[in-house]
Length: 243
Image 1 (cartoon, rainbow, N blue to C red):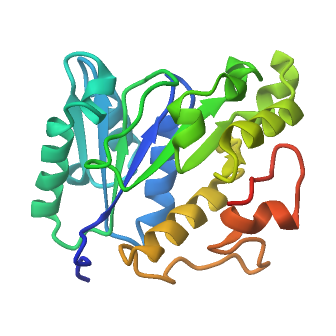
Image 2: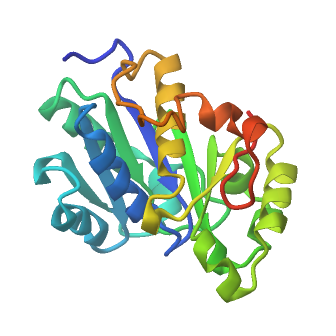
């Protein structure tokens, strides 16, 4: 296995504290590690808690997981001054020259946080239903400009009085043609669509070699579903916007 000329695909995963970023990192690593050469980098202000969680969970071998202590505003470490994260990526590439994919989790942030294009080729922004159904309508770069918006914890909607229909409508309005997916990562619901999005976008840049991940026998999804699934099936809590 060898890397492409452009190096590994770097996917930035951002979102508020508690939205499910680390859970998504864990699931992506475990779901894709048999098919791709992966490393994971997390960001925390004063600890390496998220990296330690991934190690304890067995997401990847410990040498493939790095924790960056930003020592200050987590937004700066992924945007204005991404030098610590860029160094962590470079270190992983030196240790694992055949890397296909590097997942980079930001520290807990607000709706204004974005990844520097020098650090991330693809950005995923995670919000959760428990924070209220008004979140998509608030906008901000994470909501409007991320490559994929993940609306997580849809199972909590009836318990917090949130309307998935409102979140669906507002996400469409705020994002235009940019895709989004509703998930319950606790039960892996919607995870396959996130993986297919990464594969489709990564494959288009010749960074991930496709096809390599086995598809479910029932044919319920494919690499393009995240882009076109909304035109095939639209059920609140399971749909995606067309790209």
